Length: 359
Image 1 (cartoon, rainbow, N blue to C red):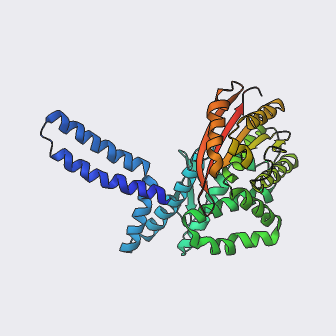
Image 2 (spheres, rainbow, N blue to C red; image 1 turned 90 degrees about the horizontal axis):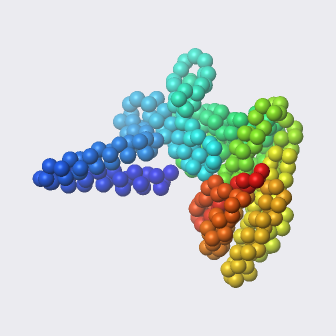
C-alpha cells in the first residue's frame, strides 16, 4: 500500500509542474499538446489511484469531524479495494472485485452490481467493528467462491480468515486483536482445525506462495470442478488438504536440501509440479540442465501446472532457465512470471508459471 501512495505522490507533484510549463508555452500547437498531456495525466491519476484518493478523503473527513459515515465508508472501500487489486495481480483468472458500502437500518443483504460487491451495513457505532464486518463479508463472497462451495466449511472458513488477516497486516494491523477476539477465537473454540490450517498457511505464506500457488491452484480447481461435484465434497476437500501439506513441505525445505525430489502433486483434479531452484552447488556451477530435465519429467507425468521458483542468489539462474530454455519449449506455455518480495527482510523472489499444452 505504501508503494502505491509513493507513486500517487510523485505523479501528483508532477501535475502542477506540467501545468506551469504549459502556461509558459507561446506556440499554439505545443500549448495544446502540453494541456492535453495535463488532462491525460489528471485522468490517469484519478483512474489509477481512485482507492488511494478515497483513503485521502477519509483522512480529511476525520480531520474536519464531519460526515463520519462517509469517512468510514471511504476508508473501508479504499483499503479493501487496494488489497483486492493487489491480490488479483498475483493470480490468473481472478477479477479485482471492489466493495461499496450502503448504510442501512434494515436488512443487511449483500449483492453484486457491475463488478462490485454492495455491502448493506448497519452502523455498529464502532468504526473498527464496521471495517471488520465489511472485510470478512467481502472476502467470504469474493475469494474463490466457485471453489469454496465444494470445500468443507472448516477449510473454507480458515482460508477466508487467513486472507482477512493478510488484509489487516497490509493496511490495518491495529485491528488484528479485535479480529482475533470477535472472529478468530470464537471459531477455533468451535473448530480447532481452523488453527491447524492457519499454521500451514503461515508456513507457505512465509515464502510468498499462499496466493501465488495455493490460491491460484484453487482458482484452477474451481473451473474444473464446476457443476461436477456436490457441496462440501469430501473428495475435493481431501485433495486440497493433501495439496496444502505438499506445499508446506516445499516451503519448509532448507536451501541445502535436494530440491528436485518429490516436488510433484498428482491428484484426481490437481496436478501440479514445482521446480525449486535452491541448490548451492548447481547454482554456483550455473548449470540449468538438471532443472530443465525436472520440467521434462513433470511433463511426462501429465502435470498440468509447473511452477519454477527461486529466491535471493538463485534468481539469476531461475531466469536463465525460464528465458533461455523453458520459454522455447513448444509443449508448455508461460502464463505469468512474478518478481516479488517476502518475509520481514523483504527477500527477493522470482516465480514463473507454465501450463502444459498437451493436457
